[in-house]
Image (cartoon, rainbow, N blue to C red):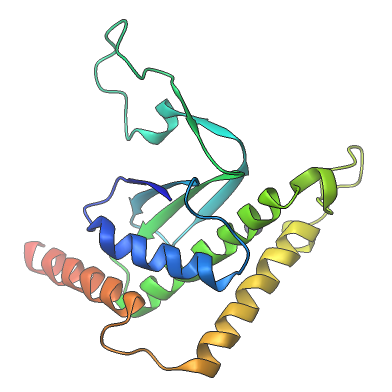
Length: 188
Ligand SMILES: [Zn+2]
């Protein structure tokens, strides 16, 4: 995974949850996939694009200095099948809920990347594949149904297996989020 961490959260914490989310949806290659994580005051959101490369500009928080010949300006970063952008929800009531939502949204987006890596629009049912087809409601699109099914199956497996243990990566992320919330309450 090529992680572009634009949050203050330690990369190891994000990486552990992201990799667990990827493993949970099965046959997805993680090594070459570009994942960008930004902080948000709102609920966790995610989006996955079918792509073989991402313009580096999109991976920066903001453009810093636009010197000509700045090496890397607009450079294409290779990605394996897809590019994921996730937001890490800060300042929510329940840190564990926030951490779990990050896991679920990540798993959903990995589900899309899994499809992209296995042929994507060329071989699978995608709402916009045929062109001219009536646009389905977002949740009814075949690719969304598949991604949601991957997550449902993953969550089922997790519940069947074990409850959250103290060394659990989702819990570790929740503890960090909780710490941030405590801090922002004190600073207020
Ligand atoms: Zn989706």
